[in-house]
Image (cartoon, rainbow, N blue to C red; front, side):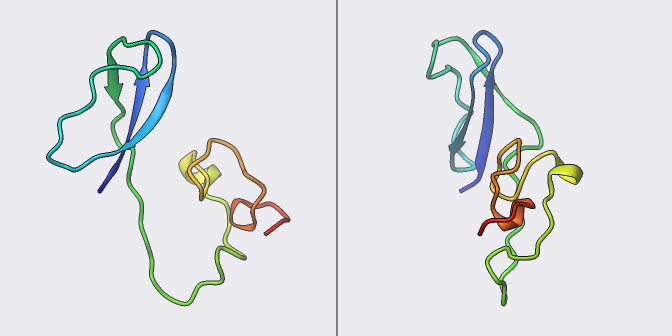
Length: 86
């Protein structure tokens, strides 16, 4: 199932939801109950199967995509996010 990002313009709350492609978009913010909008171009990911060392040595995608390997807006400190810890 794809992950969709939503944003509430009233309170600024942003959140993600796993939804089937045939499900209608959410309409209400879970925080304030006001209308939300689904963000365009979000929720995409590429999963490459194969012999990986769990992200070790991968460079952070923050500079190229604006999101890190774990989906955050800033580095989490893991090796795949460009940090020193594993």
